[in-house]
Image (tube, rainbow, N blue to C red; front, side, top):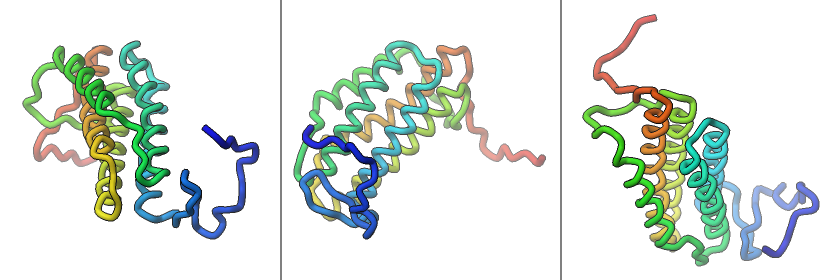
Length: 185
C-alpha cells in the first residue's frame, strides 16, 4: 500500500467527488461508490457480529472475510483491477458445507432473530445482499469481476448458515415464520 493518511480530512471531497485508487475522481453517488459503500457497510456489520460470542472457527472465518471485503473495496476502487480469487469463493463454500451439515433441514422460512450473534448475522446477510445488488447495478455500466459477484452471493448464504449454527451452538431455536401470524398489541 502506497499512501497513508496522516490527516483524516483532505477537503478534496467537498465538491461531491471522491478519489479512486487509480487517481481519478468519481461522484460520491455514482454506481461505483455506491458499491464500495455497500461493501464497507457490510464489513462494518460483520464487525458488529464479531463483538458477539462466537465459536472460534466462525470468529476466525469472519475476521478473514473482513480482510477479503476490504480487498473487494480496493478492487472496486481501481476500475479493471481484480483482487479476489476463485479459491476464496471455494473456501466460503467449504465452510458453508461444514457448518450446514449439522443443521436440521429447513421446512419453514426463518425470521432474523434468536441470539444477538444470529440476529446480527441476519443483518449482515441482508446488507450483503444489498452490496451484491449494488455490484450488479455497477456491472450494467462497467466490467466487474464475476468472482466478486460470486463471492458476495456465497457470503450471504454463509451468513445465513452462520446465524443458524450460532443459534444452535447457543441452544436457541431459529425463529420460524408463521404465515398470517399477526398479533395486536
